[in-house]
Image (cartoon, rainbow, N blue to C red; front, side):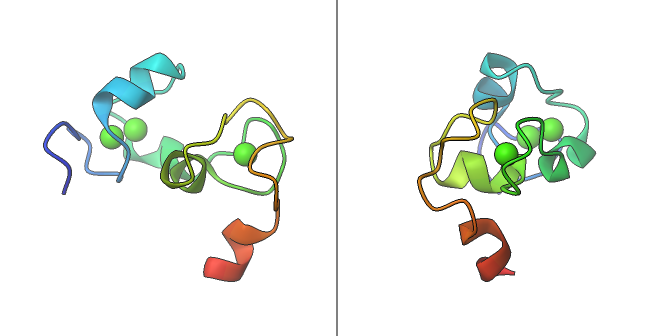
Length: 66
Ligand SMILES: [Ca+2]
Ligand SMILES: [Ca+2]
Ligand SMILES: [Ca+2]
């Protein structure tokens, strides 16, 4: 668990707030606002922009990890 992860969804509170997510809602980890098939949790892990479908460069990495 991260030190600043109140909802325990794997994404830090500060990153969630910076990207318009809810640090008290663990379900937003599985949303995909930019539609690139990389869910927010993986965008966080890859340090990519969850609102930019051009990031990460390899858009299938999220699925191949599952
Ligand atoms: Ca969180
Ligand atoms: Ca959250
Ligand atoms: Ca995405």
